[in-house]
Length: 214
Image (cartoon, rainbow, N blue to C red; front, side, top):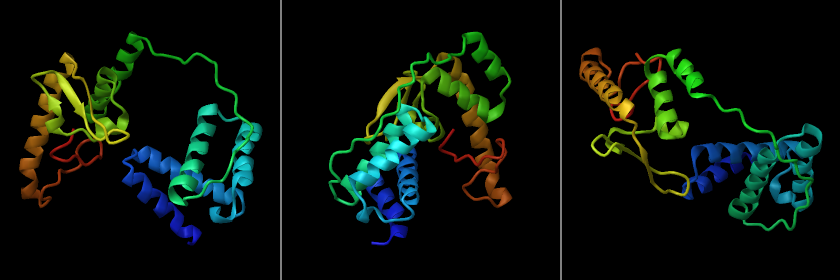
């Protein structure tokens, strides 16, 4: 198997296991960095020693966060266990120190100021993220049928592990979202006359919007 085909094999296995697109991108990226770190040697030719060297370097030389090193470690384990079907053996890499600093959190007034300085679709997405606790990709992929206005709920489909969950729909967003959907519907009805078929013209900050999506 050539190294050029390896990213495609990683993507195939990731999608078969229903991991998120962000996980897919991260695993492919770490796989490429691992190969480049060892001068483009194929992972079939390497094992635990090379994995240790690769994982130790960012911890010692780059002082990366523990979460970053853990992601790289998970990506390499996935590469060997799930894609190459190999067991590289125990890995004793130097570990990054955990960040013990307290995260900065915006106050309610700071959040209001941020939202007031946003407009259009970007503002609606930001309000949805803040009020409903959605991840960015969850909000961008949200479909009309997943919004339950009557129960004030949002159904989030196809999460990591191919699971669904329900989160709240803020009362303050109900009329805003209904108005947005009406606006999208009007644009969709005008599109055939413009020769755009079933696609909407990119009026929303240069972003195409599907009839079924926010």
